[in-house]
Image (cartoon, rainbow, N blue to C red; front, side, top):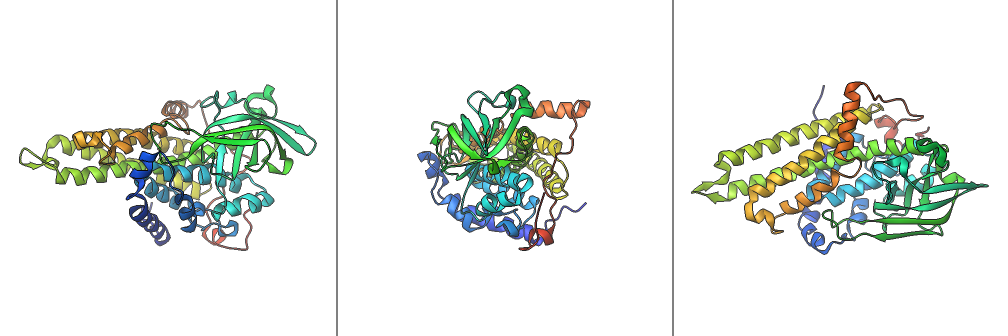
Length: 407
C-alpha cells in the first residue's frame, strides 16, 4: 500500500494550489458579496487544463488519473466551493458520463470540446418535485421517428445559464418507474430550451445555480446516451463520479477551516497568551486535523478504486457522507475559534460555514448516505456490474492521441 503521490499528481496539485492562492483567494470574497460568478473563472480553468484534467488526451483532456481529479477538487474548494462545483457538474456528472457511456461519435461531438474547455457541461436530474426520490421525476421523452420530444423542468442546476450541453434524464415509459428513464444530451441551442438563474442562496453565492425548462424540445436519437431505459443506471453512475468530487472538495473545505484557524490561533492573544495555548482551542484544532486526515484517506480510497476500474458506490458514498458532515463541523469550529470576527465577512470562515451546508444536501443528502451505508452493512444492498463501468486508468492509453477508449 503506497500513500505517496507520484510526480504528475504533485505537479497538478501544485498548479491548482498556486492558481487558487494567486487568483481566487484574493478576490472570492468580493464575488461572494456580489452573489455573482467571476466571468474569468471558467475560461481560466479551461486555459489551465483543469476542465479536462482526467479525460484521456485522445478526447482533448490532460490524461491524468482519477486521484488527480480528487486532488484538484480539494485544492479548488480550499479557495471556494464554487470552483469545485464546476468540476462536479462539468467533469464528474457530465464529462465522465460521456467517457463511460458515450458512443465514439458522442465523445467526439461533446466530450472533446468539453475537455478542452471550449464548451461546458451540466447535469439535469433534480426537479421541483424530485430530489432524493429520483423515480418521482416528471420530465418526459416521447419518441417520434428518429427524434424524442422532451418536456419538463429541472431545478437547482449548477451552470444552468453557462453550460452548452446538458445531460438530462427523462421518463420514456412512466409506467416502469426507475426502469422507464432514459438519458439524453440536450444542447442549449435546441428550440424549446430555456434557462434562468436562482438567487438568494445561503451559500455558494459566487457560483451559478439555476433552472432548465424544456418545451417540446426535439432531441435526435443519436443524442440518447446509452440505451432506452438505462437513464436511472446512468444517473446513478454519474452520481458516483459527482459524489467523489464533492468528497474531495469537502476535504479541501476542512483544510481551509484548519489552516485559517491555525493562523488566527497563533495571532490572537487573550489573557496574555496566544489562544493556541488554550486547551479548548487545541481540542478544536485536533478535531479538525482528525476530520481532514480521515476525509482525505476516504476519498483517496475511492479514487484508487476508480483507477482500477472497480465499482465504488459504497466507498464513494462513505467518503461523501463523512467529508461533507465533517466540513460543517469544521466550519462551525472555525467560526467559534475566530469569535466575533468569525461572525463577519472580514474573515472567510463565515463563508466556509455557509458553503459547507449545501454539500450535505446535494448529490445525496447525509440521510440518504446514512441509509445506504446501513443497507450495505446489513446485507440489504450490494453493487452489481453496470453494462459499462468507468474505464480503468491506463497511463499509456490515457496519454495517447491515437488509441481509442471504447465501450
